[in-house]
Length: 140
Figure 1 (cartoon, rainbow, N blue to C red):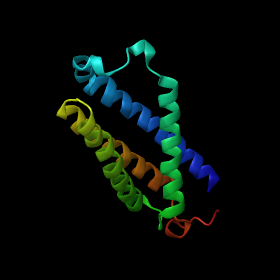
Figure 2: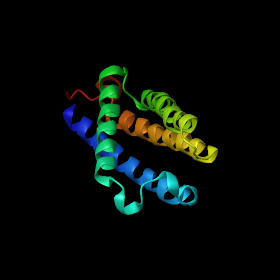
Figure 3: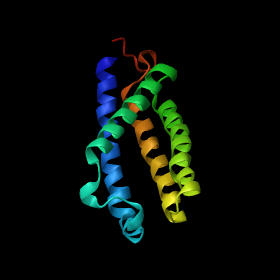
Figure 4: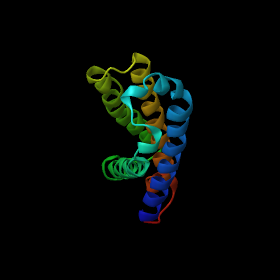
């Protein structure tokens, strides 16, 4: 189980890192440029902290799935990812929109992007951490 947990954690961290680049570095680049007064200059960004946050959230996501979801399979992982995404995406996108002068487009893309990331993570964790009985796997 620990080996699958670590594998799922790494897979989610990598997937989220790639998707973060696409969402924030490609899709939202012009929006961030148009609202530059709201953000730190690139050279002052705390990317090490951001990577650590991504790793810790990936570990929490994986841990919550591993300990709370049963049975463990792809469908359960997708459901978990979608629910997690609604909660975190609404908070990130529209929670931030309610207190900061960000464009509505940014709130929407943050929500949809978070939902996409957590759904991918749910598929990964559901495929990697499975219920042994459902897969004929008797290894612990």
